[in-house]
Image 1 (cartoon, one colour):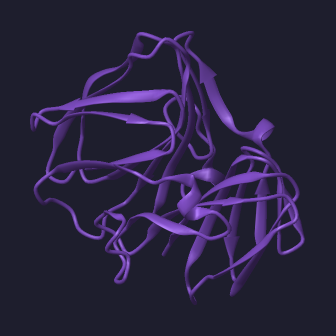
Image 2 (cartoon, rainbow, N blue to C red):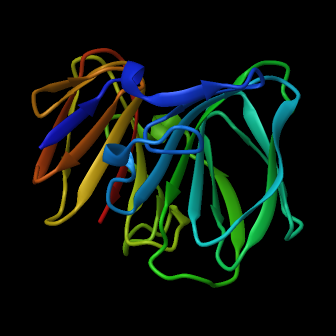
Length: 232
């Protein structure tokens, strides 16, 4: 089953400094049919204006993955971590027993990013933060784990849940396959370009909620950049 969620059906709000679109219920957008997809709780498509951002605020018991599409985001937190994550790179914050953080766009242009929240396997634990680059050439024509709590994904940023966040770039006309294990769910969003997933067209920034599809055959209709969560 593939439940297509076109971009223009997503929730969202324009706060001036932040234009956010929500794939799942979040803040002022509430839809009982879109509370989560398995352990995937939040997928926000955010555009942040220059010299603005999210001031310090707390989180607890959540794996928060930030995939930067354009520009860069500057992070600081109550553990003393500081970092700048730019387009093509990924950062992960495991909130654990509790952490405060701030995220600012200190760039001259708009920063666009996906903010993805996944429920951890267990509550508590020491909070942590990390970031690393994932060159797009390294994921050309294949999915690469960007953040993962599954065995065999040691090159990915660690998360505390039995799932993974994957990235791929696919040229128009190319096809890639992905095996989705029994009882697992996938949520795929093309950051750029349109693709066809098992015969279903998924446009840029649309969401595709996928279950009971043992193998995904993804064909690029345009040059495409893909982000996908595979979780229980």
